[in-house]
Image (cartoon, rainbow, N blue to C red; front, top):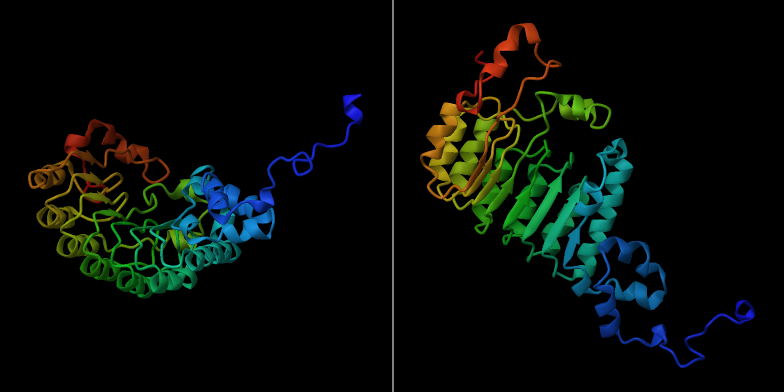
Length: 310
């Protein structure tokens, strides 16, 4: 019966011998796999596959966004152990890339890996390091100096980074066109409770206008700017509208300190603007008493009211 036959053997039958694949063919095959499949499966097949996965052409992009976006933010992401794991992965890819790395999209990394990025990734064009609590101005200065070709930068939820980093990056990275500098929802932090450490939530930077002034002065070539839940005021927004005249997209969602009139005044300077997201939100009851602020729903985005001026 067929069930009693010996297992099919490709080698004995003259079929393909995977061990005899040339490096070029093997790399071509591995390039069709996802990053996760290469790390979790292909690298463990055999020594030759393991070495092939380290080829520079397979490590020019290191993007973990699919992993992080596939599920909810977890408390373990904010632990030192998880940060070390991410750092180790990133450091490995930097070494394997041999200077060819052009895109890095990770979260919860630290200076331990970014220092190596600054030293060995002169061709880096996209850097996204959201939710990295131990990334500060010092390491961002190294990044700006070592990676001057950066075109797209995401430093959202990195609360140890200040306007000083923005100044250095804007001065040294002349090709920067996309900046994402978003903050966590400080109006209703309940969505971050039991996930993000309280001390980190409470450390949300207050210098919205200082950052806005730096962006205006040092990043005049920006085309895309995200400032969700920034604490900038009318003054900061006006500075951005005067200094970043080429903006095509700006996200001001959750920016409670600017009004509809402030935004209208800024829009008059943005002749190339194609899309703007305004801070059209409600004040949650968990933050303000409904009895006192029950009139909030009378306002629409044309008459956005600064919550601190009610």
